[in-house]
Image (cartoon, rainbow, N blue to C red; front, side, top):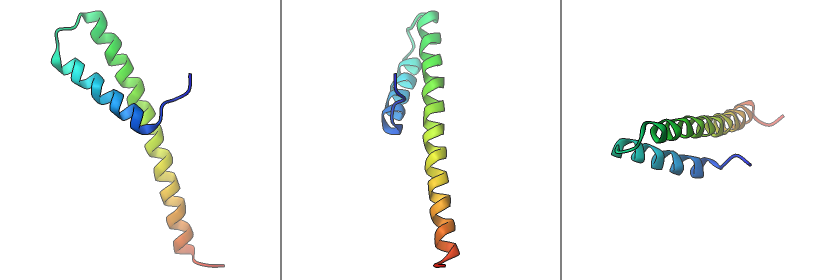
Length: 67
């Protein structure tokens, strides 16, 4: 299974949080959702780290100027 894109992971994470905040779930269901949320948060972090690296690389290239 491929990793979801940032927006998909973010949206699913928001849905997971909403379900957990709503309550009324069994302990097992809550734990399953919590684990899914943790995995989605890591996916989002990886995407953001990659985007940050690309921005830093682009800024460094601009600051270095033409050769």
